[in-house]
Image (cartoon, rainbow, N blue to C red; front, side, top):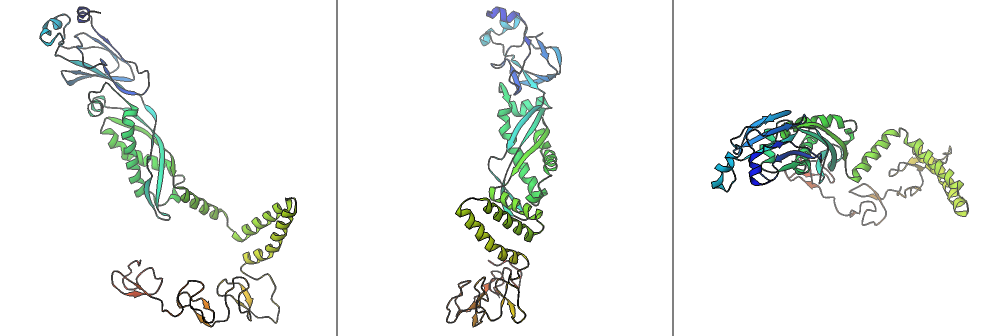
Length: 377
């Protein structure tokens, strides 16, 4: 089409989103144009159109066919624009906004966020989820996010929206969750609370956050192990029976093995079983006490031993008290210069802990000052 033909014919303006990811698309695509008086604009049910004329948003259009009115008259405008090289200074463009829901937009923590757990202390969490958005104020969205770009997609604004979600997520967890042990079953509650906090952040740009979901909140591997251990302990109500069951299962498995190695392992486990059952049955010795034998409790391992034993047969604790460690109370052997348990010199008096706030000396090993309550160390 030559220059004269383009000046005569009117435009028929419409837009189809073939990618499914464009929020806003500008027509003409190469920049502003000379949209003429009488041009036809077709807007679909899932769209809205905004006409920019002379640099201003002058009108918005809903679904239907609309006739655009500008000062660019066919043929006459071309003649009057000769001083500007044939380009009319009355520039106009149409921005088409996609009003459908953009779903399955992913968000997540690029770096772990710090969370102070009431039971585990400071841990770092990773969280991931999805969210859905919709343009509800096309003019506001175009002026605040699109500007003069020819189009804008979910990828181009997604990184900013993700950072906003992560920031609000970190604040919400710190205020409404005390421990990760209370996290199971609270994903929906956290999602709803987080979505309410983000209403203003998204509405500032003419967007509506229709849905937000949390798919995972993952602590570090060592924290996961601690949670698993606590869960197992909650299930096991009788630790004594659990240990006995495990030992019996180990013996059974060893007996099934073929060869001398399996037989030897089974024999060794069989010899260990009485001691294990005795230890699990309340700390009593497996050998029955005779009527004429006096027995005492070992102060170190709490097992029953003969009262004339010089050393505990289970832990080796010296029963004959010659002297004791001034730091931990361990019984010391003759001429011992250092404690075999804590390594403290036997001749040195244990040094107390000086409080940094009130300068009062406290007992060795004390965690809080007896004078002012300040935490020591």
